[in-house]
Amino acid sequence: MTTSALRATDAPDAAAPTDTSGSSGGGRAAPLRQELRAIHALVHRDLLRLAGQRVHTALMLLHPVLYLLVLGGGLAALIPRSSLGVDYRTYLFPGTLMMTVQTPAVMVGIRLITDRESGYLRELLMAPVGRSTLLLGKCAGGTLTATVQGAVLLGLAGAVGLPYDPLLLATLLGGMILASFTITALALALAVTLRRAETFHTLLGVVMMPLLFLSGGFFPLDALPRWAGVLANANPLAYAVDILRRCVAHHVPGRHGTSGIAWAGWQPPLLLEAALLLTSGVIALLWAARRFSRPE
Image 1 (tube, one colour):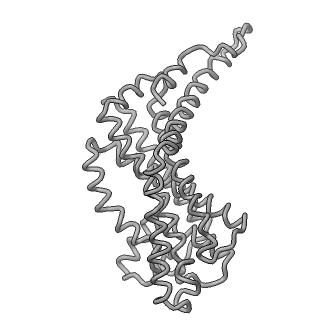
Image 2 (cartoon, one colour):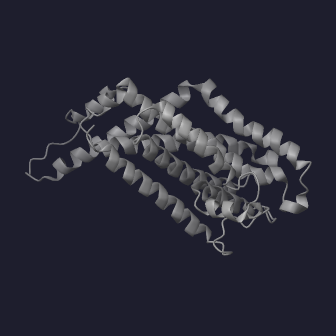
Image 3 (cartoon, one colour):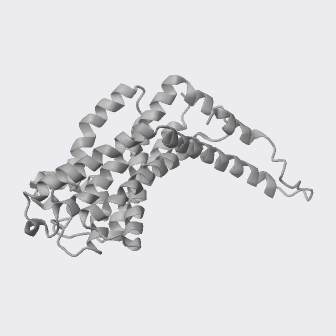
């Protein structure tokens, strides 16, 4: 997908009827079509990349699969079921889903920086659409590709003792969409402030692993020290993992090892957690769009 697909939005639509009434309705609709076509072009570009880089995609999926089957299988024999209320692999499954969507979502920020360094971003900015539209298209493409990869891992639900219940799979998919959007928006918010991909990689190495371990994906949050529990309450990944785990808990009886996110001993409702996660993603995307709209 090249910038010619975006520039084509500036051409008149031959199939559109001519407005002879003098109304400005058609004039207002044309810019909207241009913005939507630009978003579609960027999403299509990400899907083409996902389909063309099969080895890379398979390697990204291999990492969480090994965690689930090897680490989960080994620790399942050491951690008694009574301590978690469920098998450890069942407990680990939401965390591995988060690992699966995290990597492709974060890669969106890296691609934004590399596009800037290679000059491709400058060509994109020549398209007759707003800068915020280009950022929204990148966020939509990253969210979709991350969700697609997470959906592949849902095929292992039966291996960890989860039923292939359509409602369970649908709720897990919805949780992954929400988590993918938030992580992608946060990655873009970070990428628009940086100029070098090396800095982005270094910062991710310092930040992402602690955030993942403080998400409750590998061990219960109530087993953390109090100071770590406070950090977990401010961790977006912890809310995403808790949403996925509570979706599983509705279909698989058991304590699942933890009460999840707790504010002074009070567990917020599932919808409130989802609303907070969505709000944080929207705020990050709006801030990134405002920063990205500044002329360089």
